[in-house]
Image (cartoon, rainbow, N blue to C red; front, side, top):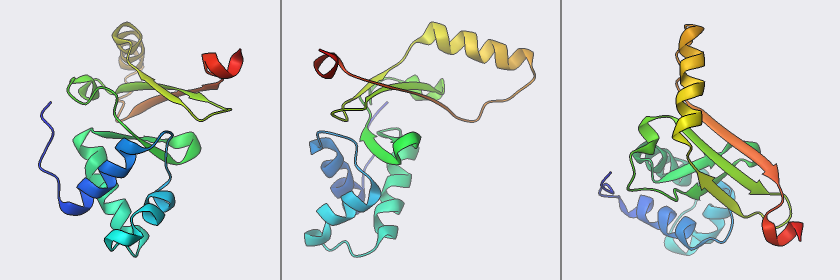
Length: 132
């Protein structure tokens, strides 16, 4: 996948997420971009919507935050299944794809005549550093 041409606002939001050490909420992104002229949450949400559409960021549903895609140049997004391990202590997020699991889940859904539109798996626990 080729990274698309980003607007100024999309680039600023993407840059903030790229430099972040943990997932960020839209309001945290807004706070970090106030000096660049961001005044309203809608500015951040519009940029995030496009970045999500392009597949270069992900939304972590359980913590209502966003992270940069760890595999932006792979075409894993067309498969649908993206999985995240989220550390409860430090907030570290590990993104991974397992095509075998993805195919088994999709086959099960097909057998039930269910058409999946979107799927994300979030596993909460403790990373190796925090578990030690």
